[in-house]
Length: 499
Image 1: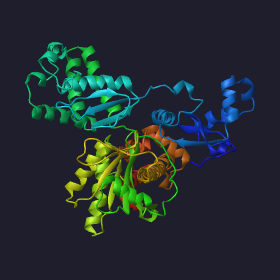
Image 2: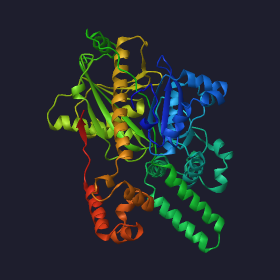
Image 3: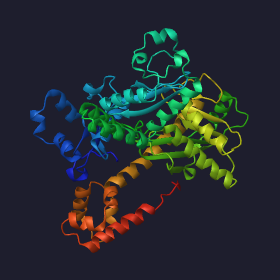
Image 4: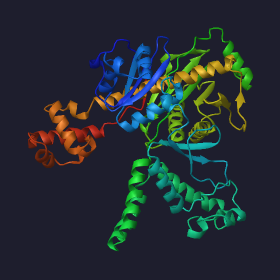
């Protein structure tokens, strides 16, 4: 939302979200979350608050010059977004949250011969894959322990476990590990187990939940209620944890254009490109908790943004927590269209991220049979440039015009992706399918959603059930609601759209 100076409660919805306060220099000084944005933000601007607040709060209130907010769907989303913004901006008044506490991630180290699942809090550059972050730390730890045991994955810390590792391993006592350290399974057999666990992380939890349901019923039938409760808790944790992801929230500005093309020449020299990269495209992915996932494509020609060529995508084939698969889908779809319509390829493709995103983009190009073209990944943390086939990244001076141009392209991809993602999220929150059905006003819409919980659940209900459960809703209107919701479900979303 645009920055505002004067506060009027009517401008702020009574919905969950995150608010941001800035000082007169435009610096972010405080980030907060709220179940009800209007009520929480109004409390800062009440004259009486200055007299009752402690010195720190009074100082904050007196420093507020501009404010903005972001509406989200739930308190969980608000927690995630607040945490990300605080880590990005380190606001002066968020003292209590300026430590290193972060939500847990699941980490995979692809350098290991027998990869496993580990907990982490910080994403580091390298050949790693991350799932998360997950606000449900207790549920995540319970689920991780179950997955390691269920699929026989190693839980030891050694990247190359051997017989010495085995001697000190508690898993050998309970037979939870398939023991690759002593050759009980080879790398291929272990990888099959690991791929099955990965499928769960990517959201394919139905088979495992069915298995847990069966074990829970069997335990209950045998009057082993403690065991049945354990299976119930694991099943609930699987549902709550997996398939939800967030990515960092930032909206940087694009620097001034480079009219002389010096940055283009510098980039060609630094990377040893045989063709001067006059036409460069960049990709980025944006989603919060795996919801409303989108990709952006931005373009630079001769060092200048070509906004008429920007594209945005709604991710279609990946609906769970996998940024790599989302990047692969976006790259495949765009370059497939270029090949199909015989449109010339760019001189350079840049993806936001390190080795994982770079590998995903290359895999997508190979799968569609695209001709070779230069590809690189730009990792944010240390501004490292990753190139195919190179173990070590290229690190340029922060003042190098080549790096500055890539940063501008990356930041513009961030901005464009986040803008699109915001609009979809706000549209989802503020515009229900029920609003388009004549005869369904605001009061009846609230009754329907209160009774059935969601539009998805309402869609599954029979007209007779709707009419009987919602007072004042006749059978004819109930039939109309069912028919229109069913028709809306068949509607396919637009794939690649122009700006």
